[in-house]
Length: 77
Image (cartoon, rainbow, N blue to C red; front, side, top):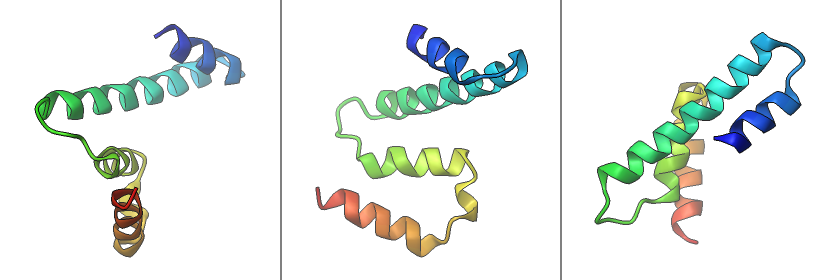
């Protein structure tokens, strides 16, 4: 949490910008934690983490073909 706050503070020019950056980072951490807790007995694919983050950041604007390409690329590693 300290790293999230410090990084957000360092990159912000105002209190409002800090709040927005911190909320975005905290949301990303929360989504990843939720994903890991939903399937503790299974491996979590990086592609799934990426998909959740892209959706949260407006991924619906990214063409489906690009998302499938990223998923295929990540699954091969």
